[in-house]
Length: 221
Image (cartoon, rainbow, N blue to C red):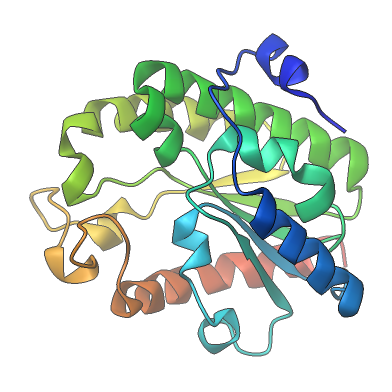
């Protein structure tokens, strides 16, 4: 559907593409048991991949986890036809961008913004039944403290991108859940690597996100 040249023309920087084995595993799983259409697709990086089992966090919702590796925005786009299209989701929870920044810093922030803009274009064109894309804001973590200003700058562009999407996208800022009153990430919400979330924080994030998902699922009824 998309090539690396398409992404470069859209303003993205693509140093490499990985995770082909994981994408093939998704394709085989979809072939063996086709995903239920009009559900909730969680797609993106390891913040999604480690959010398991999703059913425990979102009971009575048709949720599907398609987080892979340490995905960057360009990988989500290049695998769009194999990961995002088959489930034909009604709602998408999108989480990618921090690995773009970790890999490329300032250029990665610009690439993440360009990538999400292109992701929305693909959704509009190929997934007319999708009612909402919830963009999980790029979050601070103890391990990437030197990159916090770059993260803030990226979010400052991603938020208005969502706000001007004619209702398709919603920016989900959850830093207030993750950080203390001084704006510092709460260490108890991170694994020992200082990067990935604990089950306790996933529970808090799920409780915060559930009303947005429920509202999006009802949209258009």
